[in-house]
Structure formats: structure tokens, C-alpha cells
Image (cartoon, rainbow, N blue to C red; front, side, top):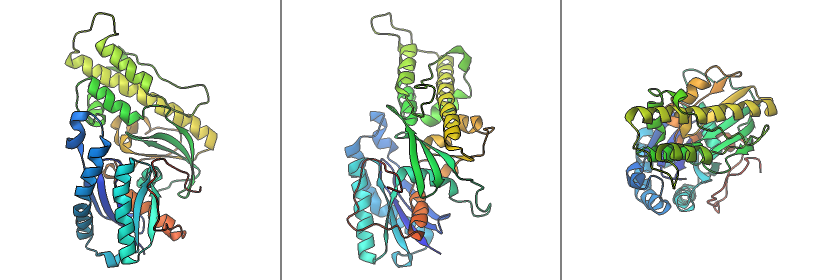
Length: 343
């Protein structure tokens, strides 16, 4: 039995969690920064890192308290040390290294994006192990990432496709800003899409070639902008009505989901996949879940509590790494880019 404290500070969530045996979540504490970044319609790195400094100790104390454990009870300290905003990462990594040094516990550095895939495992004690068959295709879709992986085990994960520009969650936020819907944009657009008629607007689907596994959402975002506000040098369009906004939301979401499904299908063929694993903030999207409910192979999503950035997924994946003897030295770096687990 292993009890691991996880720390997450890769972007704008300060989180800590205690997880037993890689699955049983004893605490999952998250301090969000939505209000700090809302007026900027996106994350401001300097503001995010300062907020992490303020939030981290209270979040750590609360996670240990909710789990009814002390630092001496832990078997390891885990931290998401890549990828992310460097200032934000440094706060969590420094805290984790300090705790590991002070307690003499092993330190485990975890790739944040790979942990999003592992999040499907969390909190499923009563149901027993998920029937995930490897090899699997993994899709991580969020505000910062849209990437496809060949997953042969939880420690054998290889990147096979990624976004060339905007991540899909970023596109949701930008389209929400165009429509005046606030930040973050994903949940509100998902809700509006159920009331709109996607057939009234047709937005482009960027497939980047017949065999490409990469993504591009910047053209779709620009198409929405031109549709709503018109093209420079031409008469401006009147502000959209409420019904037009819902129709745009539905058409935009349909275009995003069409691209995601097509790329997943291609990846399944390339990998010879027996399962699909979806993680990241956009994995909470109801439209995407409905679209994949009848997919050709079983599709696994996280519980919604573990879709957005959290520390439980960090502690969970760290259990697998710790069991394999894959610990980190106290000179562990904060790294802005992702990396294969087996590199």
C-alpha cells in the first residue's frame, strides 16, 4: 500500500491531493484562479505564479487534513514538473523538493499531460479496475493541449499528433470571448450548443491532409470571428441575436468534435488500438462524450472531478512510477515542454 501526496501548479490551478494505491482519492483540493484571469480572457503567467505562492501552503494543509494523514504517513511526494508555465511550475516543484528533503521521502516527477490520461483510473474503487485494453489511443484535450498518444502502458506513452496552433480548449475560450460569453468558455459553449441549430452555420474542419494526426483550430476560430463581426473593410454586421449565438455555439462545437473524432479514428487505425482514453478539461464536454458513446472501440473518460487540472492524477501516476523504481533526484527541473515517459 502506498500513500502519495501530489502537487499541481502547472498553469492556474493550485492543487494538492493524497491518493492511496494510485486509485483511491483521499483528498483533492484545488484553488482556482478564474476570477484573477477573467478580465484578461486568458491566463496571465505572472499573476498565476504569484497566486500559487499565496495558495500553496493552505492547499497542502487542507489536503493532508481532509485525508487525515500527516507528512510522516506518506510514502512519496509527487509533483507535476512538466509541461507548463515556468513560473507556475517552479512554485510546485520547489515545494515538492523541499518536502521530500525535509521528510526523507522519495520525490517523483510526473508529466502533467500523461497524468491527464491516467486520470480515468481515479476514484473507481467500487467498480473495480477499468477494462482498458492496451495498446490504446490517448487524447489529451484542454486549454493548453490537444495531443494524441499511443499508450502501450502507463509508462510507455508516445506522442503521435499535436496541435500546430491553438489547443481546442483555447479555441473555446477565444470563441466565447468573440461572443461575449466570459471566461472560461468551454462550459458555457457546451451548454449553449444544446439549444442551437448547427445546420444554420457551416464552419471549416481543418484536417491537415489525409493521414495527418495533427490538429489546427486557429482557422476555425477566425471563421467564427468573421461570421460574427464581418470582414475588415466591409460593412460591420449587427450584434448577433441570442438565437444566432446559440447556433454559432452549436456549429462551432460540432466542427471541433468532428475534427477530434476523425483524428481519433485515424489514430486507432495507426496504433491498432483496442481502447481510447480521453483526458483534460475538454473531456468534460457533454457533446464530445455523447459523440464518442458509440465509437468503434471502448472509450474511457475521467470522472468530471478529475477532468480539469488536479493533483490527484499526479499522485495516481506517481504510484505507477514509484512501483517501477522511477523516482527523481532533488535537482528535478521545472520544464515547460512535455516529454515521453520512457525518454
